[in-house]
Image 1 (cartoon, rainbow, N blue to C red):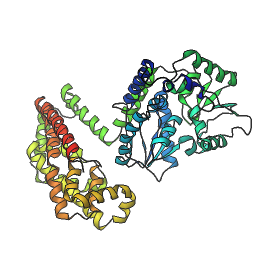
Image 2: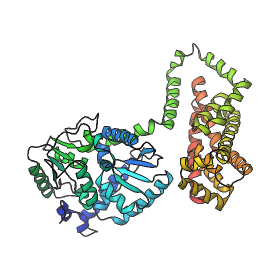
Image 3: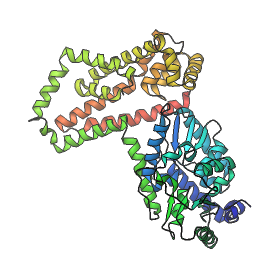
Image 4: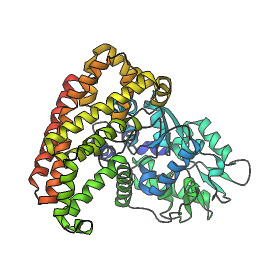
Length: 493
């Protein structure tokens, strides 16, 4: 029997599948996995390489996740490295619900393609196991293999390294890690002992505690360094000198107390919100939120002696022909520089209202899309193949050959890639310039009008304390989102 796998006798997959206990365990595991798979705990980013820390690592130490991500970016400078916070559904897998996990992974495979992810580096061996089982089109590595040995600058001399149960399914991976950290060749020894958690599926407390005691007896009074954050939390209950190997990366404070389930969920929430807010879209959201707070609380007087001064400034800008030209010029070049266009669209509504704002924003967006298209087709074709990825280009090219201008219309209504990326990608397809410009102009209208109205509602809120336009546009955006989702399901190209 493999080390640690004696606990399988207490798991529900060896119970009758329809027994009350088996059904209850499956329900509990499903709820746990779905919560981690849903907003606000789940977070995905566009990148060729993604760091997938796993539930336990992210829940126990957000600092370890941030530091590891920073080191991976430094170690892989030629690749864009993103972060994925999600659950691999291993709790269900360990209960034998293989069909349920396989159904979930159909969605995961679509997400990997959508976000352009070709390689995943995980910090969890259970996740590593699941990726090997279900992630056929994604290369998976473990972070302890990818990071160089000298990255662990704070690693002390240690006697025992605890190896978690899932690692024993992967002999090559286990040997590579042991060789990197000089295990079995000197003073340090490995401990192939189960911590007693049973992957979260153990319901026999007495058996669980006996496995935990067995592991701790092997370590005696020495420090335990483990490769699993879940095991570390188990050991900390009675052995305060228990650490995860990644905690010895620079700048990380060693955790010395086991965390409650609530604390782990709060850590996962904070990690997800930190990543969602501190990016271009998140900063725009914070900027808009700041404007609303300023409008309600009245701190705008810090910048303007009177709101009439702000009115006068806006009036002069909105009636100055030079402001039209500057706006259109900047919108024409911004997408080519990968500058987000959402802020410019909101600005048009803020300055010129929902009608003329939509006209200027739509004109500017069409100009910007056309400039990127022409640069892609005639100047940067070869470079963009490499920069944007052959897989993305093949996908767009195939859809354009099948559906013509309708593929572009679909992309404008449902932006599955960022606006600048779409512009450049379609420049690499055979679509004509005339079809591109007309389709772009007409199929960007709904979103453009909605966002310029949003900008106008912010002006009304600040100048007149009028909340009605803001409430109306939020309802409008909700309705538009529902309609587009329905059309997406019906017209999916």
